[in-house]
Image (cartoon, rainbow, N blue to C red; front, side):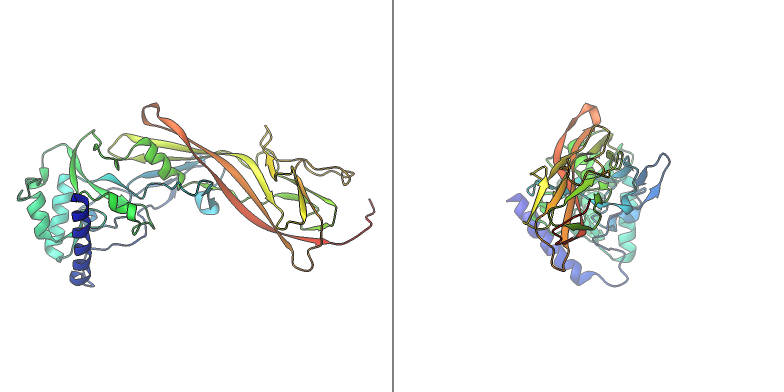
Length: 359
């Protein structure tokens, strides 16, 4: 009943937001996240939300302060693709709590509200005017309120954050606590509090892997009943690591994506794959399959396809996807596994009908 009441109050507050906000209001709520990007040394890429300010009281509720660092795989996040989990029932958390403001920053944020007449967020779905903030955090009129923004105390005020793009998910309402105080060096006892496992799942969402464009012989054009050899050279795919760190908590997690297999889908049922499952394992040196060499046309490739019918003017859509095994480690020796992820690319494959082949 308590949670339902809070959700109802949030809906009322949203309605009030529509009524009270003006074009000059300092409050804004959008779906664009806080993370910016900047490259650091060692072939890594770091994304950070920067430091908080008084105006963060009116900031985007999708603006996480988690710091993301990319490394490994020889790739930058902007040039690659996101993984699709093989488990359709799994996804990173829709919401969680983070430290967002010191007492001074909250006091300054409320002062901004007084000057602008705008609204500020006390959780992901609830927005207050300056009078409500004063009652809760300055004058202690609420039964669970504070006095003078807890100035002089060691700690921070925490607030819920929603995963970007999931603001309307029903699970995002689970983080319905009004912005609350947490002593320095502690984490709230709440099912939606940050943990190494939660940060690992957040990092999973940030993994970017290389395109899966395979080498083939013949390349792009083949002949009915002629084996097409498929391979990836040594070192094409390497482990990709993403580290998530939440400031002011001591919590971190590093999620690792390791390539373990290539799956081939010829784009038609009139084809045979090698192996029959279409799953080509990654060799110990990081390569997949075996490159074609002259004189191997009559041999069965360890990784490849034989098309049984011509493509009749429209090329087949050969799909190649890499399966990535996901593991993580984090604060205090915590570790675990997450569902495997895949990344797929599509290549055109034209197949012609020729009965006799000169080799």
